[in-house]
Length: 37
Image 1: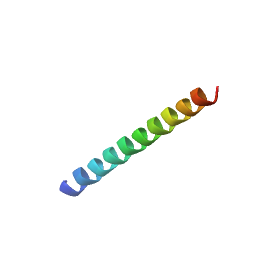
Image 2: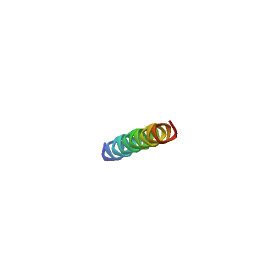
Image 3: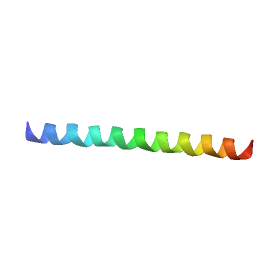
C-alpha cells in the first residue's frame, strides 16, 4: 500500500510539472506574439 501511495504521489507531481511547463510555454508564446505585432 505504501508503494502504491508513493507511485500516486510521483504521478501527481509529474502531471503538475507538465501543466506548469505547458503554462509557461503558452505564456512565452503569447508574449512573443505580442512583442512581434
